[in-house]
Length: 508
Image (tube, rainbow, N blue to C red; front, side):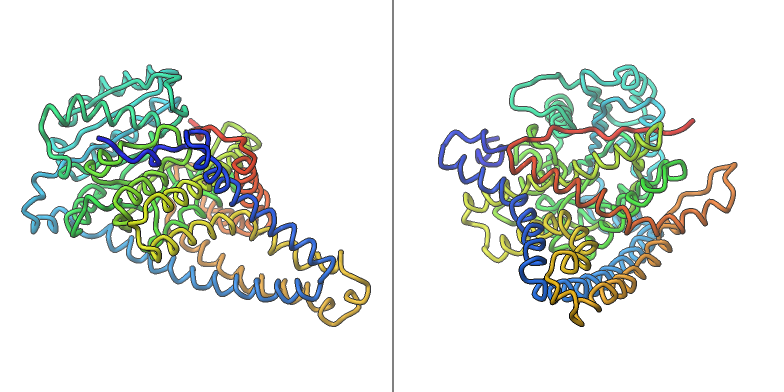
């Protein structure tokens, strides 16, 4: 199916028209330039106008404190709704929809070098789900240079457990592709269309496709819950469906910093589910196969394909596309490796790859210019929210933890002797301490979300889970702002990133 050419742009050089390349390149520069300008301006004003910057930082930390409190209420509400949804008999609820018997679930599992153990655990979770297996289509799509042995063994063991099971191998070095999840998944989904769906003449509107990582384990009622939300929508083909990602498969063996960022990612997504008008797709999620075909499948030349598929649909359907929060969990692996330092390196790389989602900014800004049918207010609201999110990601930790002292270090002697200079560090410290009370909620919900404690681990482990959260303020700059700044700087300078696959590691 023909799609607008601008939906396939991965970077400025993909555009043939010189003027369009310049515009897109300007948009690529924008996120990093504004983040660096913010930091530079803060340093400059701390030197030249210490009073101005001191008043600004006081206002900023107060805003940050109230924002933290505001989001904590969202986290609590999302958690309660998720627990409520886990108890509902969704199979019984969907009986009220006549079309429920016509729904098929297509599950796409792209894999690279994941072990057979991890892959089989994901497939067993699909078998254990409550959705009829005669209505499930599985596509296991393995990279040509990946763990073929594990893929072939999985096919032998599980191919007869579902209505259809397709194993594909994604070739390397195909033109107009970036080696990664998006290209691999696009390949496998296209093969499923040609080899399974079209020969069976299944209407695309009756297929819900779930994009999972190879380590994704579904909770028992995921597909029945998803089916209910899908059938409940007035126009389900114009929706994506976002579950709550829990990075808990190996949480008991992950290092403390890895656990903190695993739960932090979960909590951020839970809070985002309380603001569905600003929600975009992240990691594992589901959508109509109709929409996937309409937009020409996932971009094979984008690093952040999980969020990019939302923007593809949003632009293609003239803004008539949204993400529906499921308030239902799925489980994946926390970032862990064979050693502590390797894990820290991987945590940084994973944060950098997620932060490279700033590449969506030039994509949707250019798309907004090319599609005048999208209402301006919808463009501004959603676009500003994403842009502000990436700006905050790269700058907030630095501003919060440095600006309380910069005016004292760089300002004049007269300012250093003023009452404002004397009270600035203590005031910022007190406000941040109050804001840190939000950690109590994070500690509480992280303990509630833990899977059962493995045999051999004492109850004292829970105490370490609680105490390690107080490391968060100390590591925010190194594992949030710095990787985000690097990602935006690479985009700004045209030093484009490739796809970095997160290592999947579990101790025996």
